[in-house]
Length: 149
Image 1: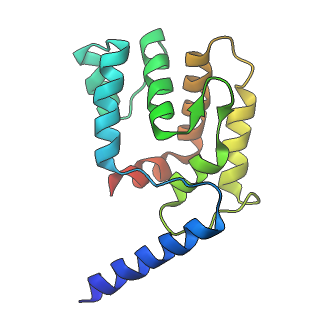
Image 2: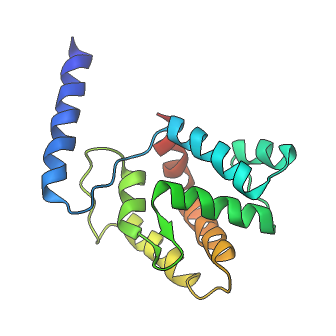
């Protein structure tokens, strides 16, 4: 019963939260990540060997992996080639459902810093890759935790 109450409360928060924000971002799950991984692996023609690495959160610095991560970020809605990264959405994903996120948070600053630092890179894939590695290096526990559920 307790679990049910918690779930209902959680749902109430999520619904309430939607009225405050213009950012209708839904936190993605492990299942989403798995689906995106399959789609992106096909898109960039990643080898079996690379896919095994991706499953262990290892992303080698090569052209295929750069575009793989770009694809993943696009699927999550974090990144688009014209506007770059959406710091707010990344922050919501890392914070998890029902958590208020504020621009002043340290996490927000870190994400913004990574996005900014790599915003001038030549091609879109390497921009997405290097900024993404930067997020992961500064917040890896959060990143992994956010899609473990």
